[in-house]
Length: 374
Ligand SMILES: *Cc1c(COP(=O)(O)O)cnc(C)c1O
Image 1 (cartoon, protein in one colour):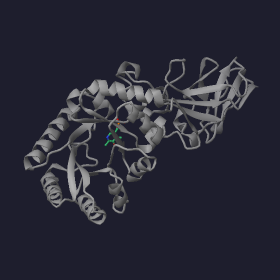
Image 2 (cartoon, rainbow, N blue to C red):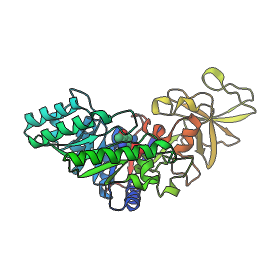
Image 3 (cartoon, protein in one colour):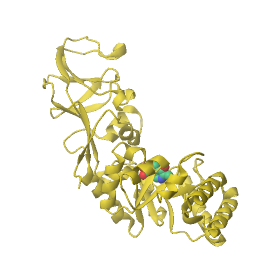
Image 4 (cartoon, protein in one colour):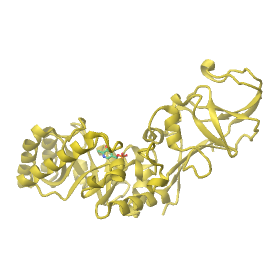
């Protein structure tokens, strides 16, 4: 074993149950886009459903189709697509589709005609994020066009939704403004005749911090994987979450070097004294962030160690001090933290990024090993 990402499916189940307990009657969507944030979409989606998640979320239509191809049933929503995407297949696969603009509605209508099916759509309002979603001045036209398509039997408007810009900063003024804008967009759509099955707005931080954002459905990505979306405010344990991924590697070498020895490309680090260096066979090709040179933490033989020198494509070096573990011994890059190992949040701090990016970018060269599969 060079390296592997151990995926604890019991932790996925625990996290979904924990979120469900928090949101009461609202439904839970496990967001499994980007291969479940690097954890493996199909396995995590199954585990989430076993724990009661009634929806799955996929950004891309291809991701939604992958779930169906793997035999997953139940509701799936997909929301990020471009003209030419395989909408006939998506609609035939009984996947719900987000619509943010009139061109998208026309594409869905055309697919519905070709396939002879009624497409389930969720109209997305831009309540302030400034990314995907329909601006308020276009909302009436979009809703009316959707209602016309509904009257023609081509679509069923089942959802009204939006997305936060700053849910991880609950005091940010945009949070209240977006909530008010969403209430307004929903009220108008309902007044014009939409009878939504689900209104939804909350991502993980909103689910954990803003009960007033739960509406009928919460969409949890990071929380499903047990990572804190608000690391400065709360740890996963404090949020009732259990980290899912443990990234381990086997030491590929241990050697003694003298003081003053340069380490790795560019010699950004020199040994301060005679020491032992450990070679860890994972690098930026595996998703170890290059920005974590001279900073990334690992656990070797029960001791916390630090990456020294630059992160290379396939390997990093750690300073082992006086320890002389054996080649083949386990190095834990991150995990839940209960054995003293660093967490994904620790790596995010070391690399100047967010834990979302740490787990999501673990590369395809690292096999996922599933624990707790049913
Ligand atoms: C990724 C995404 C989510 C999940 O966000 P988390 O913060 O990981 O829970 C929810 N909704 C949309 C639209 C997304 O793109």
